Length: 280
Image (cartoon, rainbow, N blue to C red; front, side, top):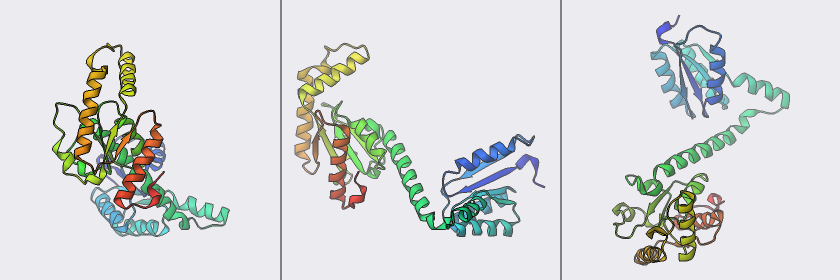
């Protein structure tokens, strides 16, 4: 019997394993032990991954519960668990087999569809995490991993565009341009085909900045929203864009976010030789 001080349940899933974890926690309510550890192993899609996790579970004297769509993977996990003498339970297989009988189909034929769905999901999550981390020039150490890098002065929709694009699976970094402050050297060390400039009309920018100041109860008559300051910033950005003509420049004045994002993706995809399927 497993040592009560080291009870551990490994969830092996080709998805997030969240549903399995919820079911297991509900079942564990029936037991008095409060020291059972649940190890959720997400996105397990190869036999090598499964073998490594089962070896780890064996060393910890745990049990295996798996929720995997592929019949081949389910069979392999069962085989590996039995070989190691581990208790195991197939949480998804019996249900799929019963549904197969009811619908008269073979669920295994949809494994690739499930896998593609999972891959898209994890790609979006990874893109969102990267984009949030690299908002407003906060992190430049791995700028080369960005799919798209947006540069522009304050209030040119850098952050909204970044977040919107990240939900489409694009890793986006955005770098602010501030007159008097040096442009980060890292920006010029990455693939310049991925860099995009943003620009806006003076009057529209002034209105946006004043609205923002009013929203936070701040003085709208300061330098931040003055036409003279805005003019300096726009001139600074335009001069930089002229020096870096490989950067496509998009004017965001009075344009819908989706429209600008779509055009950016179309240009970047063409420059990187990506298929039309990446467009939205």
